[in-house]
Length: 192
Image 1: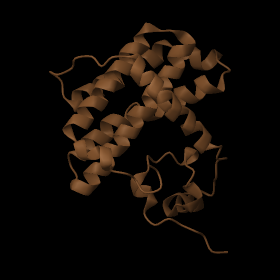
Image 2: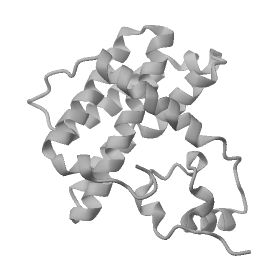
Image 3: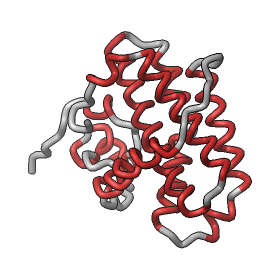
Image 4: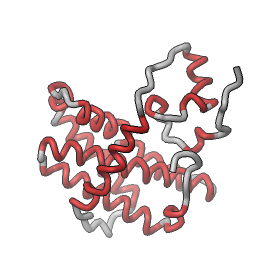
């Protein structure tokens, strides 16, 4: 049986194999599975990310960006990582006491991307142009998904502090797109 692998697809992904619809066509994923001799069940990631994509516009339009003109992308992404970590720590019971699949998925997205955004932005400063665009696009995707995830939690909890977190993410997204206008026309093969 011949596998229909997509060459170098792992260069364009966010490394969240459990939620990727292309994991079974990715050499890196299959190599990892082979090495570990483990395979986690892959649920319907396409449906999950469609929910996040549809929620993004509603969330983005519901909160204003905060004037962070005196801060740069790195400072804002560090601030977001710190503030989201603080909120998640203070609200640990939300995860433990909640049965809602939407809330639990949203929390998983937030946990996964909370430091990822900072790392991808940092990596972009150390890369050549093409690789830089990939890193920035991954940060942009992580920001969009995080905004959507926070909004899902906001709708459930009405916690005001979440508005601040969404505003920080929105500010990062605005600064990112202003500093890198070519990002709007950059598409990751198979993903965008």
